[in-house]
Length: 187
Ligand code: 5GP
Ligand code: MG
Image (cartoon, rainbow, N blue to C red; front, side, top):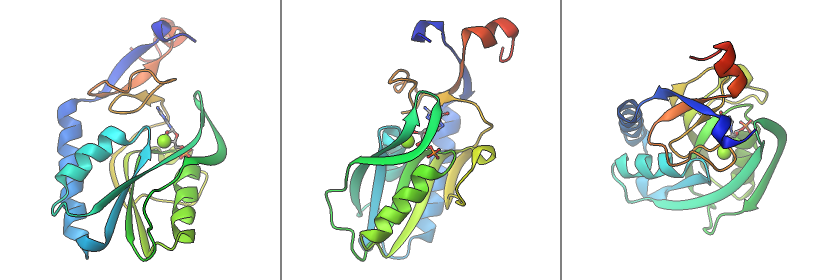
């Protein structure tokens, strides 16, 4: 399927995203016990825009930030195998982790990363996700913080891609294929 056969149906506007991210940051700030011991970890690539906005909205902002690259996805289908291809640069032994991820889908990625951080000696691990697709869950996991719950659709924008396209869209939208457009599945 080529990109020019795809149409994006807007789901959450820039404004809606900003409001939810601000509210989530406020909730996280309120729950934070020890900001000096916090390390926020952004899962690349998909969470980079969400993480940038969330991190700037959390107050106080004097915590450490690191990045990890993990993937469990090829095209539109989760493989169930999670691969960490670029690990943390910082020592997280004894640290409280805020794991920032774009989508909680089957839950394989987040579960594997939580285990990974625990193995690295993290004191606590909390998770903040932009989108949650509970209907797709396989692993037994719930996010501590989430912006939006969504149905089982493939979404792009605000950092999320379809084969590396659409990450720069300021809003989040559902990918609509040519067939769906013709059948009026999503109008
Ligand atoms: P999980 O391991 O929970 O099945 O998959 C989570 C990862 O799959 C997310 O971090 C995200 O990268 C990818 N993913 C799941 N659903 C979507 C989607 O609708 N759109 C995009 N772009 N990525 C998705
Ligand atoms: Mg991801």
